[in-house]
Image 1: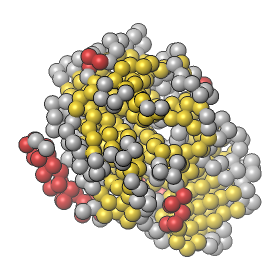
Image 2: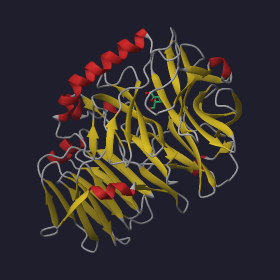
Image 3: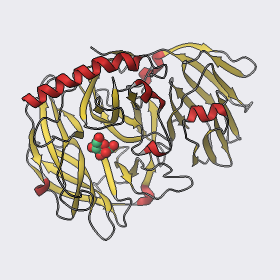
Image 4: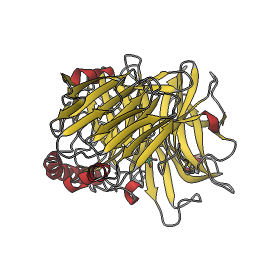
Length: 486
Ligand code: FRU
């Protein structure tokens, strides 16, 4: 590591040393979700498993609780339950990434070595949204034999390698290997009368020399920028995941400022044209963006998303910033093919965190403050359904609409920290699973056909009241994952 790298690393360690004890005092610190040790976290990066060890890297800014210069933080685990924080392996210490080690991915070779690809952000004078100046988005490669230490960085694609008709917004390489070749998708913002999101697909024989292979987009613009692309085959068809920006808000879809979703292409062949009607949101909650998937050694496709939202600060203030930390990652979700949609289910390992089953009194569960729980409600049928959480959040289903509502009362205002409602049209609600951590809710409807993720901030005892008599419910209190910092 060069001198700048040494200085940065030393600075990060000092900041973490001061920040971790402060963050740990927050009663809203999470029990089974990964968080930044201190400061700010955004996208999951470099998700992979090698020689049994899971690696979760993430966009990290320990310097500033509201984001800022981005580096990669790193967690590892053998069982998705006991995690070690491994520090910050990638710092902005080269001329190609001096303004941020942006998002990227990892690929595991047969011998267990990791190949990492990420975007090196470099800012220059001048506008950088619309034209090809003012910013460099270099694709950088480095390897790790042991999964902890990384070799020298090499720039494999620069501005000159990207097509002329793109702005300088090109980033977030996701790489995979197939039939002896390497493939890389990059998200982009294409110039034109109306700017539009698109994916560039590159191919390489050695992971170092890349050639453009094809471009994938919709016929008419579908948002102006596509971030964090991902591409994989499941159930015999190609799935393309993107985080699009610029989709107009609708009543039942695209309710956040930015979205994250997938195109189910229905085809075994890699597509060129994507159809807007094939696009399905991964998660309809307030806090979900920039997900990434990988295949683990058990052959499962696991997805992790960022529980956060760029630019959300206008309507929402996250109270955890008082303790010097902000945002989290979702639990790993197993993705499988369903009927016309993908299904998402919390990795089954999490079930071993279930402690005792809690029994309701007079149809109501009352749990100690700060209790995390896992609740499964079945036999809802297609009847109307209503559940009230700590008197401030309602989950409702009737007439083909599901709503997650922070009520307009004191409890609701406090819990939602400025949020109101998210809703979706769903034909029927048969089953609901609520994965409730101290300040995160992940709702899985109908075995994960629809998912809603949100931060929430209950105060005092937690109560759960199911107002639909026919449903059958079970609720387990949840223990915590082990996370060791140093
Ligand atoms: C998505 C994103 C990526 C970028 C990273 C920077 O949230 O904007 O496109 O690489 O965050 O932190």
